[in-house]
Length: 212
Figure 1 (cartoon, rainbow, N blue to C red):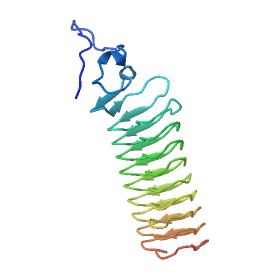
Figure 2: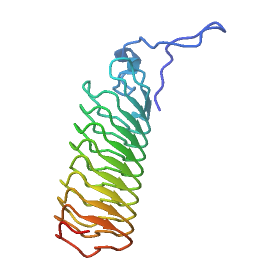
Figure 3: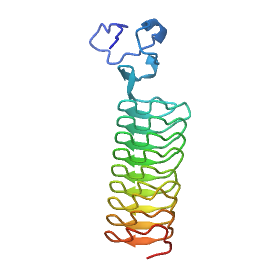
Figure 4: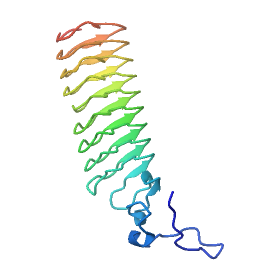
């Protein structure tokens, strides 16, 4: 770990120190980073970014928010690689390793859990709660609660799915569904406007629509 001595705080009252030393002055062995922006790196990898008063982003965790550009605002990412590829999206909240990792421009998403909303790149207004909930999601206005819930949803929109492994396996574009229960709609792909409640209900349905 290369380190560079930059200054001494020589009294007992100063509680803060502003690093205003240009990165070029740190020497070739130091990582090529902007040390004046308040970022903290471990072995050259971003580990903590407390934000500043123009973008209002907060990131904590190895590579969390790593690629956030100047247009990305009001985002919170906590966990390894959370919101790693966010470039210009705003208003996202990601808690968990690899949550919202692929998001680039999708805004106002909430992801809580390991790899929740992992593949969501441009989709917005989605809420995922649970490990790998809405993992493949590219759509918008979807809710997935439970481990692997809505895992396979691709471009489907306006779905509300609650239950472990509900709507899990369909690599799909289903929309406007309400489902609650374990394995509900397990392989549903293009089925839409369904209301499915109960364990294993419609677990083998692939394309059915307008079912209650």
